[in-house]
Image 1 (cartoon, one colour):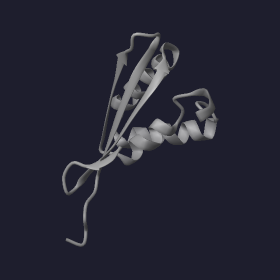
Image 2 (cartoon, rainbow, N blue to C red):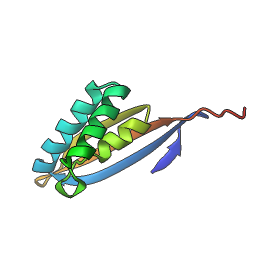
Image 3 (tube, one colour):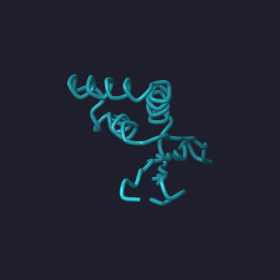
Length: 101
């Protein structure tokens, strides 16, 4: 889902069913990202691109770092389902400054 919170903040929401194993990988990655400032996120992203580690095929790749570079904030949560899966909810908020106004 893509929407608009205010005149200057847009959001992208996503939900997916994931395994416990994927949850651990994603949660580790997103937890690390939330501890970094923008400069360190960009630095880590460049490092991962050069190294070839965390490619998308292995899950929770550098895509989260790419999103974090471009957004003003991100939020996530995991909800256990009745099966062995988790509902993964992810929200990225993007601030937009209209320079024409």
